[in-house]
Every structure is written in structure tokens, then in C-alpha cells.
Image (tube, rainbow, N blue to C red; front, side, top):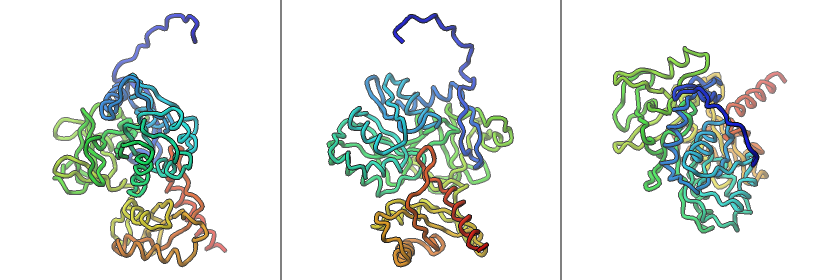
Length: 383
């Protein structure tokens, strides 16, 4: 690397040319190639660096893989644009991340909720100095309140003062396009849009903007919004729509609301919302209640097919003590949910698991859990 190199000719590329194709579930639920331009990455990098206060000499731990918008757009591109350093993590593992936190002492840490949950249980961090952290963000999935509290407690005990803040984004806009400000926290909020990004709530299936407080589809516009889906003009037209204001808005497929001060709140991905006996059930709401139970280590809630209800609420739980996995514990947890939720939101049954499957990004793979659950039921019926 220290040797001489011939001059490399400048590539004939433009600002609006495609720079990367990242694959994601997309707003349609099926894996699609998302075309992102040079402009998209430049805008996202500048926005994320400004929001997180990244500057020359700062370092960020690149926990998320760089085939993912979060990992590539924030952990690598934004850091480099700010003159900072990206510390690459060879594998998604709490042990590896904990070691790098101790030895490399990064200033910023971004990741998914399961990462922060795993870090709170890593014994090596109990004696680590975490005063190096100046900002931590969680994204890509709903952050359970107990996970946030445990991580902040761990950091405080180890000399740090940061709060674990939430953000929101999707690969169709590279990655994060809004987050909680470092200076202000609001319970349950995913924050406000990044500089140069716009967001609003529209009535589902329309372009009608809703007033503050009403729930609808989160729509975003700005320089980070994708060029479109690879070789899929129909899906592109469905996601990218020209509104009356003359702007092209990305319809995210996510439900949420905005308060009177412009802070946004995520409810659920439309594709994940459970429709049980005609009632809308939000998995994150049920998961939050399950996490309050003292025996629960991890929880995932999803809709499974049901002949009477079309879908029924099914919970998948990892216990802190596997020996407690029995019918009495299941009944106790269902009663715990019934004490805080309406009847239709409560899980009918709870399946205890040794572990919950994760995607390569580290999110709980609820689709795989449903597939495996249905396969087990079908196997029982055949027997």
C-alpha cells in the first residue's frame, strides 16, 4: 500500500447516477433491489454526521453489515464524510462488540435492539470503561423500554452519560431519516426528520395529509429517497408518488403519528400488523407488555393463521430460566397481558423457545418463527 501507484482516471459518473443496489423487504414485503444514487448517499452521510455530531477524530463501531443501508450509510459513509474512523466488526456477536468497546473505545454506537439487549448481559462489560461513548442510537426495530433502561444503567455504572435514543429509517431512503435529538427525549418517539428531509402522516391508501395526533402512513421526501426498485416499475410507482405540492413522496408502508410539535411515533409496519377478529393488533405493544414480566428475556409477537379469527396473536418467548417453561408460566404470562391489554391483543398461546432466530442484521426473524410454527401445526394435524 505504501508503494507508488499509477494515476486512476476519474469515473464518468454523475450525482444522480445509481451508486448501489441494496436488497430489502421493501414496502411490498417481497425482497427487492433498491436503487440508490450518489446523491442519496451524500445527503444521508451529511445528515447523519450532523445529527450525531460526528467530526474528525471521532470513531463509530460498524456493528451492522455493510450490505445493509444502516451499516453502509451511517457506520461507514457518514463516518468517512465527517473525517472520522469506522471500526469494522467482523461478525455480529455481543462478545466481539463488547471486546471492541473495551479496546477501541468508539465514540458512537448504533445498532438494533437485540444488540443492546445482548450487551447488557455480557459479563466483560461489567468492568469496562464506557465513558468514551458520546451518542448511542437504536434502529431497524422497536426498542423495548426494559432494554433501553438496562443499557443506560450499564453505561452509567461504567462512567458514561449517554442515553440510548431511537431513530427511524428504511433502505428506500438509504437508512435513518429521522431520530431523537441528543438534547430532548420523548417517550416512545422516533424523533424528528433529519436536515433536508420532510415527513408527514397520510391517510392509508391516499395522499391526504392527516392532522397531528391521527394515525396513518408515514411518508417522507427529500434527497435521501431512492431512485426506485430495480426492474420493477409497478412497485416503484406504488411507493414513489407525486403529491399536490409537487414533491415526490415515499410511502413507507409504516403506520405512525405525529404530535403537535412535529415529533413522530412509529406504530407498526403495515405488513406486520395483525388483523384478529376484525381488530388491529400491534405486535410491538404486546411485546412491550411481555418484556415487563420478570421471567422474560426475549419476546416476539406475530399473527398466525386461524380458521375462526383469520389471524390469532401468537407469542414466542425466551425465558431467563428455561426450567420455568411450563403450562403454569404460560397461563401466568397470558394473564399478565390480559391485565394490561384488551382481549383481542392478548396472545392466545405462548411458545417457549431456546432462542429466537435473527436475520443477518440481527433483527428477530418473525417470519421464520411463523413458518416454523405453522409447519409444526401441520405436522401435528397429519399425525
